Length: 540
Image (cartoon, rainbow, N blue to C red; front, side, top):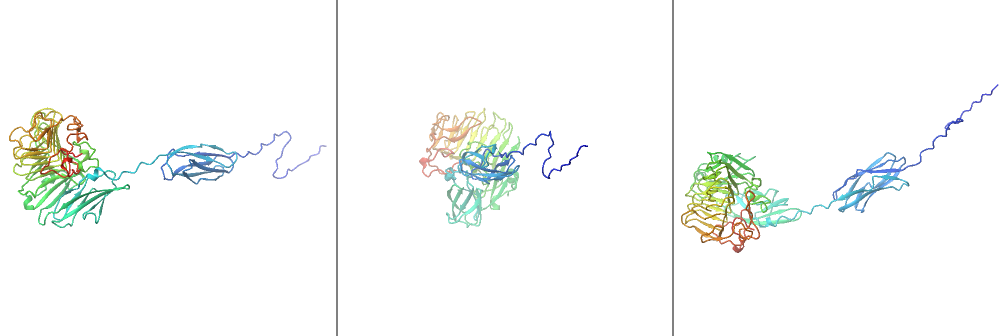
């Protein structure tokens, strides 16, 4: 009879039966790490996400991250990770340049993947230069001058992060932030403010100077209205229609300030903007101008922008008259003024009078035009003031391709100072029409024209230039289309640019003039020495 034996294995041991295979041995330690998520570039001095270290092995493993060169701070830079765990770190580059970010381990036999990784730190852009030097030659300007208040303005300057002004020659300063003008109030009538304006950034400061003399007590006050999006009125005509009809009895100067946008009209019967009213006093008038900071001559790139009509850089008026003789801006009120504006007439008139940019019919009084860019492609006259009117630092451009062209019509004693009258596409018959003996031209350019005036007595002429074949006394003969002649940047329509090249013969060739402005069309100061003043509206 067989004997049955029962055997109980001790707890925790493995029962092996005869014929079974041996159990597998426990896995050997296999340390492994991976490096992921390291960015390809970083920013100098800025701590940013640097990546992730993950323990992909089966044992707790030491890790460390460092850069070559060793000029990148890693946080945390080392530690231990249990299997499956990970840790994120940041990188802060102390020096610009190309780096290598590498993962290492002090645990023997560690397999590392994803390392090293290239890490580039670009050099930071150079700091902006201190404001200037163009701005250091800029001039301040004043709008709305009343006995106790005025608007003080200055051209914007590139790279400036703030402006300050002083009314007491630098004893105290007031910040305007990044606004290039200030509303000055509470002043004393009849006194003079000594102005300083400075622009600054992290690199340095530049300063310009000037002065303002306030009118005496009892002088007219100024009513200031703004036109455009967010302004008091939506159109210049609406602002004009709201003013007092008699400025003398109202004892005001009415100032229409256009914001930095293009005001476009179109009509074959109606003027774009019609300034009219009753005044018999040169101290009470309507002034249509660009708002502070809104003119082409306030633009930070005013010295590099092409000198031509461009509504993108400042307040502008344009009118499409089709084939008819309709005016963009008509000054039909005595002593009216237009300044710091761009005015253009468009349409399809190629033979008749066409559309004027600016016209005035107040023959008995003096209207003024300062720092304006005027263009017309449809008019025989671009600027047509009938009367003893004055234009200073204006660019008057006739771009009509055919027809009888007269760039400006300064009849009955008109006077021009440092202006440019030019026909770009079709050589003009005359530059100024019939000026008359009481009129005159000083330091002005008459370009691409066949003649100066269409009839009448010869006006006073001094310091002018033209390419006409036989210019009268007071107008020197200078080539229009050469670098060393008039030397314009570009005379080809529609990309014309009437800034002067450094090689221009017009540099330092001006003559003394009775009403020459202290600054040019871009608010750049003219030299105090006349032998350094340029002919025309642009001062190099």
